[in-house]
Image (cartoon, rainbow, N blue to C red):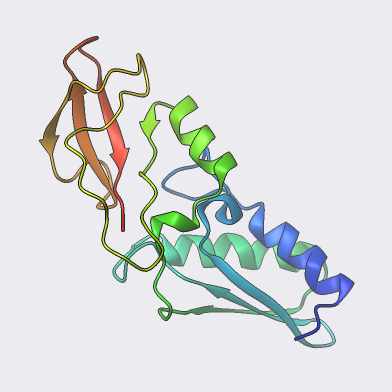
Length: 163
């Protein structure tokens, strides 16, 4: 498939939209933006894959993308949810992982391509770097994060789960 210069620019704009639940990350850094295709004059189709099937943030993402692309002269913006192939935490860019840690959220550990999530006994604290952390709750402020506490520095932190 050949991508036009306009599609590349619209993808850059759509990808720069902040995630509504993790505003420190853009949709591109989170890896949920799958594609942008111009379908006619002033018409564009955007494909998003949510971090999990029931993600409530998809509607906010679609609205924010639509607003940004309409500001660029696109009269008709269609945002489709694409579930296959499913999103994986491996889709988070290196910059996105860095920003999560800087923001105090432990980034997901990389998984093996297409294989199971590797078993590790702990998650590194984004505040002090200790591996002596405890799971407090499998769910945190969003379903894609778990709540942990560092036993070394005592700070609670979110851990973006591996999918």
